[in-house]
Image (cartoon, rainbow, N blue to C red; front, side, top):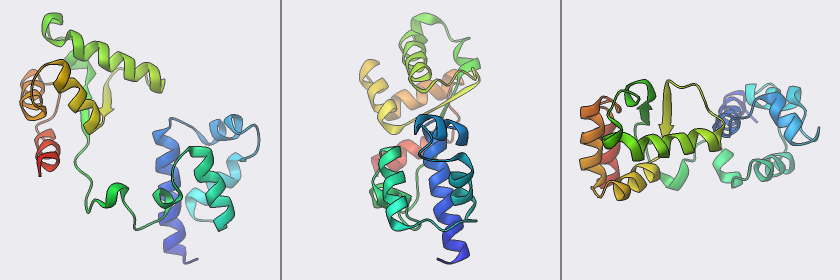
Length: 166
C-alpha cells in the first residue's frame, strides 16, 4: 500500500469515526478492547497498513459499507460533496420562538442523538433540510432563504440546495 493511499484511507477512517462522535479511546471502549486506540490511530495516520480483513471488520464496527472507507470513492458516486449546512445555534436562540420553534426542537433532538452540546453550531444533512422543509411546509430552497435571512444559515448554504436541485 502506497504511503499516500494509506494516508487517504486513514483520513476516511478518521472522518467516519469523528462523524460518529467517537474519540480513539471511545472506539476502544465501545469495542470492549477489540480495537485498540493506538492501532486505530496508526491506521488513521497511515503509519500502519490495514489488511482487507481488518478493514472489513472496522467497517462493520462503524456500520458502514467497506467502499465508504476506500480512497477515491464518494458516497453515491458524487463528484464533489455539496457545501455543509451549518446552523448557527447562537443566532437561532435570538429568533422568536413562534418562527424558530420547530427548528429549535429539531436541532435539540439532533444534539441529543449525537451527544453534541457545543451550543455554537450544528451541522445538518440534506435530509434534515428536506425534513425541516416539510415541517415548515416550504420547499428546501425557500426554507434555506428563510434561514439565511434569520442569520441561522450562511449564504453558502444556497449552493448546497442548488446542488440538491441539480
